[in-house]
Amino acid sequence: MRPGRGSRPRTRIRPKYEDAASGFVVGVARGRYAVRVNGREVVAMKARPLGRKSVVVGDRVALVGDLSGEPGTLARIVRVEPRASVLRRTADDTDPVERVIVANADQLVIVTALADPEPRPRLIDRCLVAAYDAGLDPLLCLTKADLAAPDQLLEIYAPLGVPYVVTYKGGPLDELRAKLSGRFSVLVGQSGVGKSTLVNALVPGADRRTAEVNEVTGRGRHTSTSVVALQLPGDDGWVIDTPGVRSFGLAHVRPEDLIKAFPDLEPGAAECPRGCSHDEPDCALDEWVAAGHAEPARLESFRRLLASRVGGDQD
Image 1: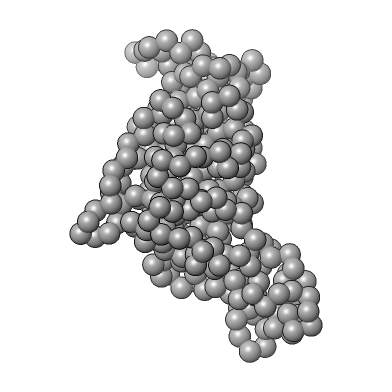
Image 2: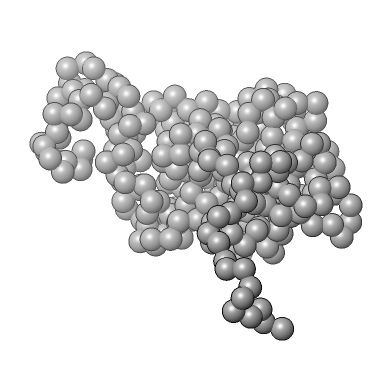
């Protein structure tokens, strides 16, 4: 029965949940969240007061309810803590809707095959822009070095000083493990480049699905369909595997903010005309470089990333 007029009126005061347990989200699937709490994994749902607030892998959250982790139990996420970083993308460069990929990561590992499928530098550029925008340290991971040499691709990114590792089928991953150790790293790249293969090698028992590249299209088949965080064995570092991407929209990144990722160029931009696109005849960056304050290759790389941000072509 509906309560009568004499029932207690509703209040806007919400409980503070001061005794809520702390945890962080390691997986999301169909409205349910896998959350690591005190060394065990529990299944949780989002509490109604959170409304439309998103909860993503990497979020630090507060939970109440059954935290035993036993089959059939369900906890509630009652609070999402402030995020230290947010990696986002849009469907394309005109889409106003941002999609949060992961929260609180500190390193973006851009996984690219040297062959099968062929590298896509403009997609790499877009991932770099997203990393700089989110405040993440980028790491270029080049796979399948047994099929092609990495020199030509590495030459493109040498002026940016992006750290890199090169791997090949069946080869050791010691260098990659060292760069992932103690970090919260998210792996991003097109399908078929070997992200899930790397994760399965780094985290035995992860059982991330893998597949070969389509011989007709030359593109990888989508295998991983969800974002999941996995702890590295014997380490406090985590890796986050993501589904393969064929585009990386950057509608959320303002072109004028990209210069902040280039501290050697940013002072020179202060002399640019109002509304300067940094790629026009009156741009002060040309004089800044000519005066020896920065390397010409750095300005060229900056303008290439800027063109990738506004151009829309990701191949």
